Image 1 (cartoon, rainbow, N blue to C red):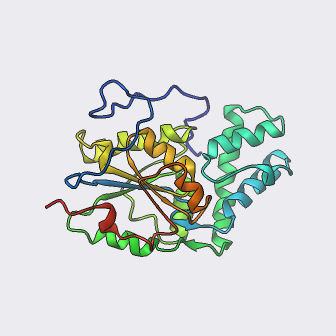
Image 2: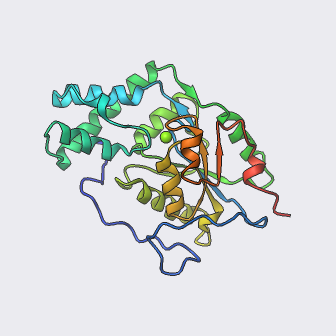
Length: 265
Ligand SMILES: [Mg+2]
């Protein structure tokens, strides 16, 4: 049985953000990068940032609703990019007037991972442009940062998608839709998990969030991280720039790992 713990909207976890007094849950603006700032953790979104699955995720959603709930229409009307799996399922259940009960979420996700395994295996897709070189560049740095995931996919969905393109292994930590329905709170979970892994002294500004939608930019800012926006997925470069990420590029060939992790002397 797939272990889902998000059946009801839970209160936001209290994640202390170092150096920010008692402004625990308020969005905060990224500070200018000082030359002595370390980057210790880089958190990647998946769809449109690390990989393209050729619409396999959307097909798995449609197949699951069709086979489990006899609900055939409406997937095409839903905006998928940047959303969390839980929010998408809740919206689709609502469209079809199906109760958003724990049992129906459970039923959906047990069948969804079955279909996702099949649709992803059959998909063309691939890594987004520049991902391989950028990850290699990060790992080749004198003090390589820890790599993690910050995604609206459920964890098993993330693993299915990334294993298909040989990208599951590099990531030592992550936060997923299993952690929370709202992306900002998934980011808070990623920060808390990063601190457990790297130490409680991990500062938000020592984290870079990489993503392809305004949702990614917002959730990175929410925890006080820096944000690298890439226009390889859900938004245009100009559209991303309007949300004031720290860096915005067409794809990950446009900047090197050294440019976001300056030498620390
Ligand atoms: Mg994305």
